[in-house]
Image (cartoon, rainbow, N blue to C red; front, side, top):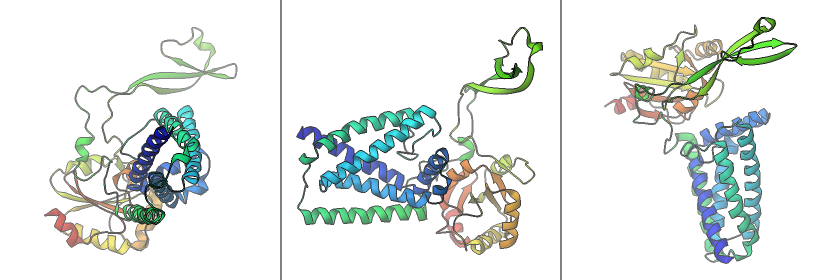
Length: 372
C-alpha cells in the first residue's frame, strides 16, 4: 500500500503543478474558460471576478501539488484533493453529457481535451487521489518542518509572481496561432484538395401543430398537406479546418476588410486589439493616440479591432480623440490575438513580429527598434 500511495502522490503532485503552471502562464485565457462555465450555469455575476478567480485557482492548484510532494499537512491536503477532484469530475461529466463547454481548459491551449477525454482524465485522477486519501498516513515530510515550510513559502512567492507577471505582460509561452513568428495569412489557407465541410439541407414543416424535419431525400408523399416553416443547413461531416479560420474584420457598414489588411505582404502594420472599450486598462488612451499618430505620419497603416458595437466605439473615439477608425471583429478571435485589453501587435506583412500588453505599451521609437 505504501508504494502505491507514494507513486500516486508523485503522479498527482507533478500533474497538478504542470496543469497549474500551464494555466498560470495564461490566466486571461483561463478566465475566458471560467466565463464559459458561468454562462452555462447562469451565474453571470461571477464573470466580473473571472480573472482574480482564475489567478487564485492557478496558485492554489500549484501549491496543492507542491505540498503533496513535500509531504506536509497530508490529511488536510488529501481532503482538499478529494473535494477538488469530485467537483471537477462532476463538472467535466456534465460537459461530456451536454457538450456545452467543449474544452475544460485543464491544460490551457497547450493540450486541448474534448469533454469526454477530460471526464476520463478526472476519473483516473479520482482513483489515484482516492488512494492518497485512504493511505495519507503513509505520506511523511521529505525534510524537517522548517525546511518544508521555507520551501512552500518560496514556492508560493514564485507561483504568485509568475501568475501576476503573465497577467500583466502576456504569456511567457504562447500556444495560440497568433504567436510571434506565425504568418496569419498562411495559417488561414486551405490546401488544395482538402476536404470541405459537408452540409445537408433540412426542411422544417408543420402538420397537426407539430414541427417535423425532413431531408430532401425523405420528404413525405403528401407534402402538400404540410406547412413550410424554414430551411436550414446541417453539418454532417466536418472538413479541413485551418489553424486560423475566424479572422474576419468589418467596418461599421458591414463591409469585409479582411483582405485589405492581409493584402500588403511587405510593409509593417500595427494593430490595436481592444476586446471591449469599456473594459481593460484605462488612462492609456493618450499614449495610444500618440503612437497611432506617429505611426500614420510615417506612412504606415494603423489598424484597430474591437468586438464592441460600432456606435459605442464612435463615442469612445470622440471622447479620447483617437484619429483612426475601428473595425469590428468577433470576440472569439480577438481574445486569441493578444491576451490583453488593449494590446498591440506588430506585423511584417502578415507575420507577427512583436506583441505588447496594456501594461507595457511601447513608444513609437520602441516599435521602430523591432522594425529594424
